[in-house]
Length: 181
Ligand SMILES: [Zn+2]
Image 1 (cartoon, rainbow, N blue to C red):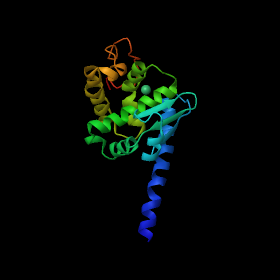
Image 2: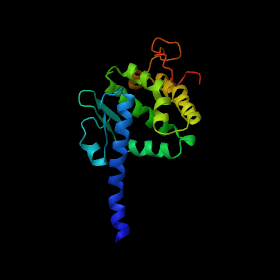
Image 3: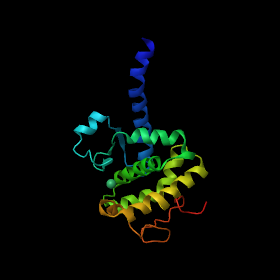
Image 4: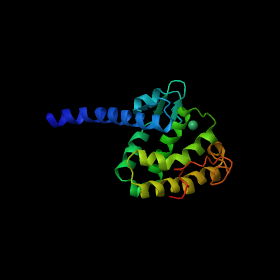
């Protein structure tokens, strides 16, 4: 009985804590624009009018919604960042991306480029060690991001060739993903 009770009670508490934790980190990434992260359950996702998007954010309310199963994917990433899968790296990038919307950017290509430059910062904020955070963030830029450009179609809206070191979209952040450590 006790095992069963804990089995039922633990996941919501865990999700509640993770949402609270991510909300604080998203607020920091959004330069103190207040963010509130919600991890959708499968049921939430079915009722969500934007269920086809893996995540969405509203800068007016600060609300970030991550669809099922992306919070779990991000949690899995944080359990073993040094052997992150392609999809786990996508979850890190998605979290940064939605935080950039809360910061105020709405254009998808600019939002995604701001995220790409900040994935190193995000990984560090989430407690990943510096070397691994750098490697993960660079892999997202070199592989996941470049694939968007190559795939084209809807993905192309999230890509710009100007999003590169020294490119027009380079914000020259001191802790940029592509800054030399
Ligand atoms: Zn977006």
